Image 1 (cartoon, rainbow, N blue to C red):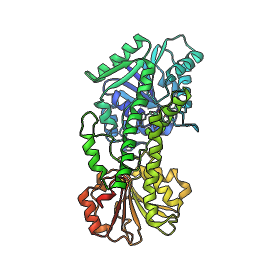
Image 2: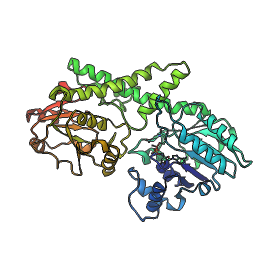
Image 3: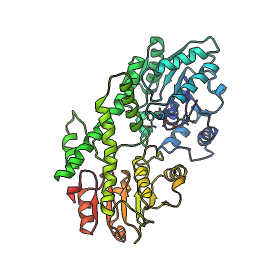
Length: 449
Ligand code: NAD
């Protein structure tokens, strides 16, 4: 059992902390006292709502309550950690590179307050070489005479399935150039996971691995989206193509679903960051650069389908958007494609009725889109906004509630137009929709109609 401190109480820090607390003692540190309070209230069963939505997280925090607590007191956070994980945000800067100001601030805080030897691992997604930067900051600001080893331990969890991803990881990648420290990290993970597939490596390889994995997954999506646009042009059905290709075990079926493009807090920023990094080192990553271009193109391609129906001026039109989170079961709206589409509709004069299965997604939408006030209405029931005044329905994410839509209720809409941004409706339902007078538009499946 080790004492661990995690910097950052976000979508990575809290699930990771709750998971580590199965076998280790965990302190989650975040300067945001509101988040800290929210975690501690859940741990102490004073509340059953957290500042982030993640399936199974509240239960896991409560299950492991004896081994975890959160604090915004830096001295308490750094009392005697053996391993520190930095899991703070690395949002893109104006050039598309990872902004490292939170990582650097965390490094400085560690340097100024740590009193014992320990290993510091970057869990944040950071450009190759960042661990060396963190090491330098710590050495330049260190107050006490302690040995601090710095390495990398990127995170591969996906929001919505974070707890399961952490419990049964495909592999755990970590790197540290100091062999003693690397061995300590190996022990830490063996204690937690037993036979899990551990992938120790050099620090910089570990940092590259994270970007490589995200960029490859994003590339699979963009690759299929390019083909989806071709399918629309020639009358093929991309859904059939996806299955035909993906059942080849060398390729795999995952991340081959054509859609209005990938979004979220990771793929867009990580593909951009590694592409920028390639340019910086005069080793351009042309495939990843194309992945990014295709992604932007696909979203425009999807919104164009709406504009083709109604014209570019959408004044007086009313749309429904089901699913505003960048994927189902999350309240995270960072780089969300359905948000982008909803904004485009509002910018063109339409009123948008928004529903999501996660209440926090609706709250975040209001908080992040004050400037659109009056142009949208939020709904807590899936069908409550369906009326004669509606001109079209946009399916924004892949929640199963949207897969089984109720044609009888939707038939009241004056505009019988369905835009499936995630290609989730099956052929039978599409045929029923068409037979009921609807038009159906998606990406690479229009021929089904
Ligand atoms: P987040 O924005 O949800 O959380 C970051 C947290 O760090 C915030 O709560 C913020 O208050 C806190 N913070 C800022 N400065 C701090 C400091 N000096 N000390 C301690 N805490 C500080 O971000 P996230 O989604 O959890 O992502 C964290 C990192 O993990 C990013 O680099 C991201 O790319 C990477 N990542 C994210 C995911 C994901 O699905 N969200 C998956 C894998 C990797």
